[in-house]
Image (cartoon, rainbow over all chains, first blue to last red; front, side):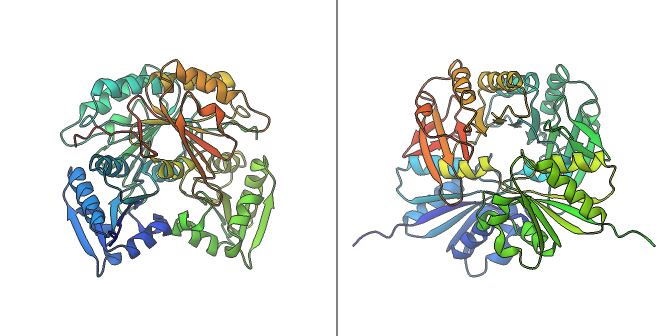
Length: 247
Length: 247
């Protein structure tokens, strides 16, 4: 008898509004027997979960969730592992693959992308990302702060548009200040900055400000910060990074 | 009599497969009177266009399309301007806003995001983007090559994962070679590289190789190239950039 081979689809919910989740993810959830995810994200897709085995648990349990997903797929189950945003961008895709390889598992894995926070935030701000950009997470939970600082320097010196994920949390407040200091060494105080809380989901709050003033605004873990390059400007409340067209 | 105020929704089709286009874009297209876009992209959504005025034109006519979109919205029309991928990432969002401002137009503009090429390509490669990354376009049509080279240097020196858009075209073949040279000054030849042609659409081709060997592969304008950071590895054909979890 051949063992039934299960699978894990690691899917991206996007920002959290079902209108921003791709149909491929919708179909994967519909076809799943088991759906595993962080409680807050599971709640976002509750209408889709009837009749399914649902496993949700708390924050920072990423590895536990991945282990469960792989184990249940090994038992032949069709598992969906839920990630917010895009599972491939600071999401669950990497952890799942790392756990799978550590277990030498041969289950099938599929990654289904989602709208990542920077795309949602940019859409609400205008067009800040129209030129080369970097995405940096300011969380030093898994990365040394010195590495992040070095990247901030190169992002600033390379005149990239800079998108910051996880800019600040209750217990982590100095990183965003240092980031602004580093950027101010290479860009002037008037550089446009967009701060978007809950981008493209319930409770969205959009602030357009400047590098010199941004620290006065509310910033937390649900916020994405986008800092313009040396050509970025603000017009009628929208942030625009010109691509270089002659109009 | 008040003038009827039209609107333009700049929408992202994502990679080109309707299963990867968000419902918010689907609804915007359904509700539009006029749909404007580059011919290739218009063809991808043909089933949705019945009964609508459709305006498609050729490559490099971006500004013309934006001018038309703004003019028709000024006449009170509900216009959708189509972009591939995410309109906010090297897409039509910026050009539309620039044209609108140049015309001092007061039409409503909404940007609806899409799955950008780097998200689609990453999903097919495994999990290469799990840490800080840069997105750089190698097209020097609108940007001086010296600026792009400087950014490549900072991307390499900052140990970012590097995603290259527009890596090569029929008439532009040396930039990708220079990019590899710059990266090789900071990363070793064994650095994992993913090359994805037609990511997440018909005709997808995925190649997993290394920085030392990548130039032997087919690369063109429909290709996204993702180069790992110093921690990225290849396992069972998938590219994984570890986030830093202890397993």
